[in-house]
Length: 414
Image (tube, rainbow, N blue to C red; front, side, top):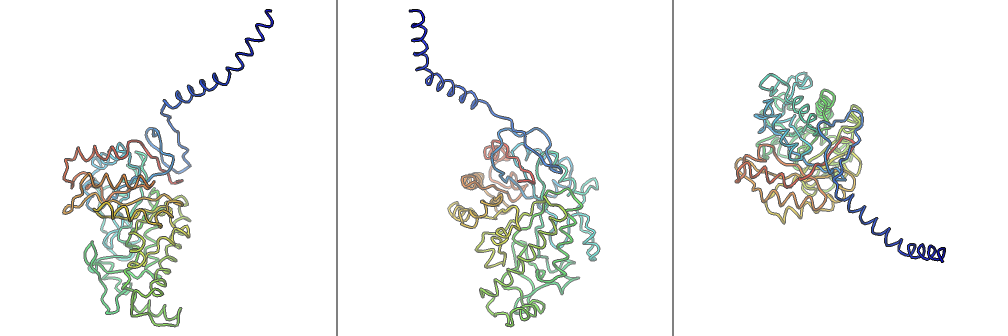
């Protein structure tokens, strides 16, 4: 009787075993989910990680950047202000800064390349005589942020700049021989991106930044291009005749003429990328153009082909508009969707200008629209994050905190 009782007890226990296992499994899952893991990221040699490890990292690299422009020089030139600014960006869970290094035909750092070209130094030194680019990169790395210097003006230079005056033969022109256009930055002339001397000069400047500084990459924007009405200078006409046995079309929007010039810029960008990678293999080769239809048709900037050819490591598309539906339409384009399958992709968002403030509600709605499509963001520009909006500074800073409640670590390996 006793043996039979034990056997029957085991039989009853065996029948209950699946239920017990299910309860134990559910309990263990709930307990594990109640903890927030601290993730120790793997950092390759030469990469940067300072400060505490980020908590609850996102599973994908997400761009959370801000451009630091000429309008931010009061911050960049003062070590204490810059340290405070970078620290604040870190607390708000930003992970990238894009400090300007090429503007108005001048290098905004001590450039041997520019001086050898006979262009007088136009260096914004810090209040203590420091190299502000080196300081910005160092401060960013101390806080665990990437620092990617930004070649803002690309092939563009004011007609009154030393570069345009000294090297007038480098400039391209329209059919009527005019050499300047009016852009958001005022009247500008355009260096001919097809000329070998221009390509070498830009390449030398870029490699100087990549090798002289501990930069995490280099960025070019919508000015690494050429307005479609330009390209009627003697050098370009002769090259087109030689390669096609034809005359350049009088219609500057002619598809074959557009494609030929765009392909030349693409070929240069491929060479530039190779030169950068030879000097610093992990450098992020970033571009921040306009939306594709505009960039290609009007500025000969075929950035989608650049991505398909693996020329680009990071894309940030400038979508500066106040209407939310128009903004959403642009960031939902097939080109952006294709890009984000290959490389970190983000949207450039305007946070305001002195004469054109952007409300916090507008900024938040655009960031949320980008995030819902798994896109990162970068803001134009630092001071306008807080200073030019209709809301008090404290309210705007609090609003940005809600956009990025957790950290999203980036490294050059992303």
